[in-house]
Image 1 (cartoon, rainbow, N blue to C red):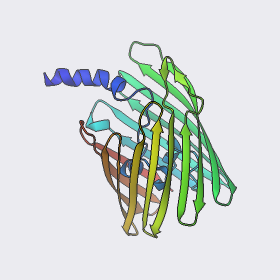
Image 2: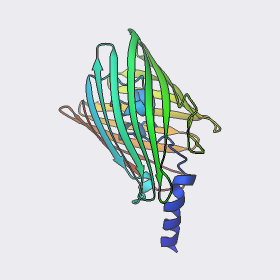
Image 3: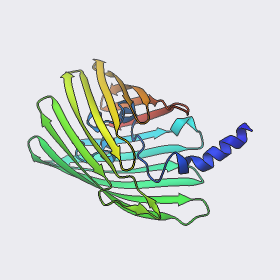
Image 4: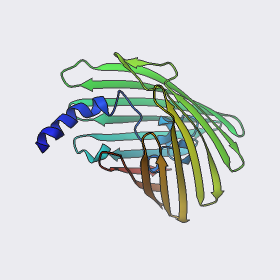
Length: 262
């Protein structure tokens, strides 16, 4: 009976829990701080807001199994580079298994228009493969902005501004607006309101605290659905290593792993 339930879950999980290309946390740090892009330092933030990334050179890779289901996996590789007032990043992510697979290629650029204001744009190529069915693909555009005022950061983004579809499936249209505040040099917090079309508002809260220069503690929670998250971060020379966990009301914990060079 247990094996039958697992087989059914593996077949139906992508359909009922993950509609086509629903946003998944692209890094352990983002998962730990409830996916608040302004609290991320790696180029993985481009999956939520194309305006946030601004590091000179950065390379990030992440891996996790959603809800500890061994037959499902998510992985990505993202790289970014900053040149004068422009930042460029590109990445690839893959989610699924042998039966169901979604792949995304993303290309992002942003420009620092004035000293404290940045605009960003992303283009995504989306590929969907379901066993015994014809492959499908689609394109998607995202826009984002970020403004700095002292210790405050205001950020906003809209994903899928063209309301693209893949086959007969509507791709998620999602807006994310929030603010972060640098309370102390080693403590930063942020809140974010997320609205996906046809779904209620979701409130997100996250914090990053560095008790030591090379070790950080991250935490967060969100509503709709209610989920709690926690993570740790280690800095070794130019490497940043993250581990995070996120709860779910019904399913098992998800464990996230990310390594980043910057």
